[in-house]
Amino acid sequence: MAPRLHQFYAVAFEENLALRQLAPIFPQARITAHQMFVPMQPEGGIYIYPFGAVVAYDLSPERREAELARLFRIGPKLTTQVIREDYSVLEDPALAIGLSDGALRLDRFTPERAGIVALTVAQSAAMEYYERIVERLLARTGEFVERLERRGTVPFRTRPLHRFIGQAIATRGEVLAVLHLLDKPDETWDDPAMDRIYNDLRAEFDLVDRYHALELKLRSVQEALELLAEVGRDRHLLLLEAIIVLLILLEVALALIRRS
Image (cartoon, rainbow, N blue to C red; front, side, top):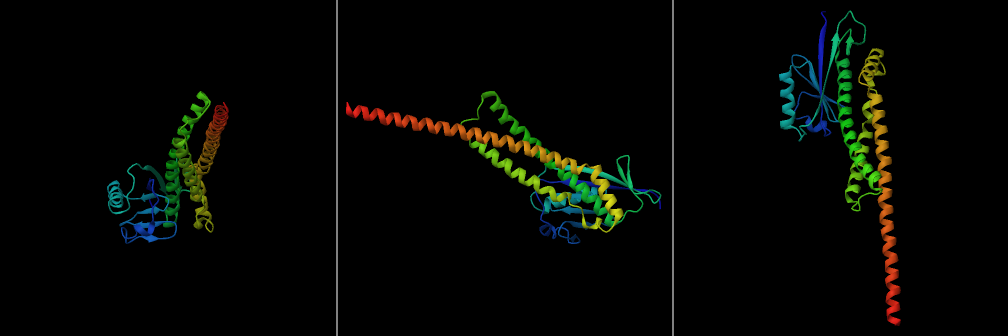
């Protein structure tokens, strides 16, 4: 068999995807708890993942874009701002399984191996989406910290700060929830070749280190927000104490006026 290049193309959306709701759009799809696979004739297909990623492989650009347009048109309302990522796999019986020149090389390209590659590319695209979110969160946190450094306090109107803290907590929970993206697929446990493919791809996309970097950034955001919240609380407590003192002085002054 002559060598062949297989192309994978991933798109990550902001929204999660309910696979059961998408079933009517792709009646030929095969659905499991973790993914939906839509076979395309004469070959290739589309993988759809509940964490908001879609991966097409061995489809022409025209066919791929047509299917994505169909998803946009008939499926749930999805953002137009998406993350796109592509990857190539070289199939050659003369080659051993491994990475070379930024591409995965396989002796045989099977549906099971295609599923492993699609999952890893989907994880990488989803991870990039979360990386962008955390970078924006980190930049916004830096603005509050810079004001604290410059003025020694936080704005008296703390509602925007509290709203941002709530947003940051929600984002942190969402990002940490992607930990399940890094779970090893069940197919790899009983097949050493599949396990090798998955481990190589995970290292190629640097998924584990990227996730740990996200954790560190989120931890620094959390620590900064805890400091800002504490400063804001102390400022309001100081104001409350000042009001109490003024009320006491006012009461004493009124009492002296009555006596006189």
